[in-house]
Image (cartoon, helix red, strand yellow):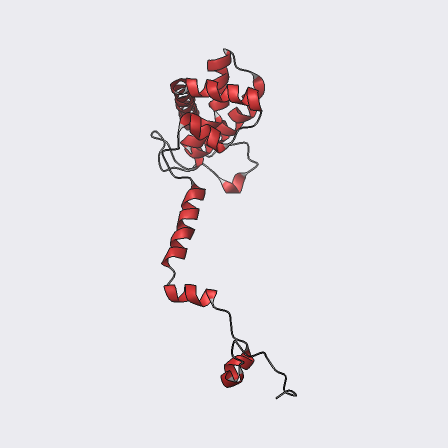
Length: 184
């Protein structure tokens, strides 16, 4: 979740680093990140100062009171702010670390308007982790490889009809042409 938050803040961080000012373009990103951080802290208990606690009260959705004190509300706000700031600083650090690649990517977009995964890999290198789609493809390949040889042979053999199974001696040989009952 923190990686997702960092990536979401990347556009805003890139504006600050590469353009020198922040526009309103990332406003929706800030809203999403704030809601996500609030949920992580207040509902999922993912905080050092407020661990293992959920402050969600499902029975009072439209109530004007909160199920926690003002002091706890301040702690939640501080933790949300700290979490967002940490991920924003992380996004900026990553962008600075890879600024040369970012510039190459920007120039490629200007030149070609469309880029592909191979272009990104050529500039930044292959990801150091396996994506979910790569995991699924590898698992499917392993399942195919693990199938017993017998089942693979059955799949490649033509299936016999029910008549051929019942009367195998009536089956014409490969050099005989099939004859109708009248011709016999």
